[in-house]
Image (cartoon, rainbow, N blue to C red; front, side):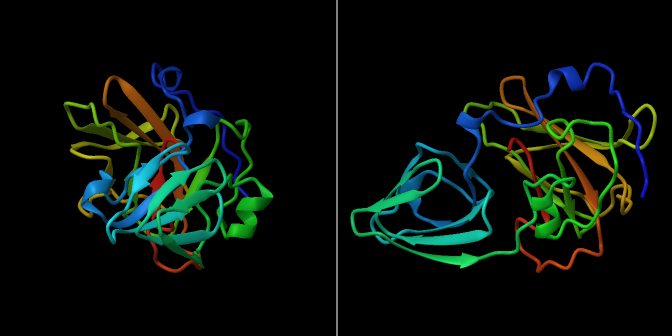
Length: 230
């Protein structure tokens, strides 16, 4: 087991909120949507108090962050709450289990049960050292959509084992997600990285992640992605 020392990224960490507060924390990720009137897109986050109209005959598939469930909704009006979604106006839903490992702490019992097999001893507090492990070497990074943003997002990835933290890759993208380019420098298995996204009106979010090819999880959106802003 490898022990890592604290890494300080000068001028960076003070400006970043690694997670969202309870009241604006996303409930689920949109995996699929076919509802033109709903004003949501794949890879969007949905939040408590959101209202989604799927009439007439729209379809929406959500992957929940805090429970190992994918739920598909057909028609109706959805009213999102903290721990449930109420369906009215004739809508129906179907729940199915999903591979579950994201949005968990790699040092917690929940993460071990979910299959996150990269573990490390670290002096960071759990709130500062949230880590997501993915099996793929080209993960997709997803962050909250900012409808008011007039520009795209700037994405930076740092190797945290280096001292000071080493910039591995940097790029710009329109929208609220990016798949790590195949021609970018390789992300090495077992090492801690931090992805930092600057988007919208001077907003920033970040997450710590690692690559673990030994993860025995089926290929799905949330098992190959690093969600930010949780």
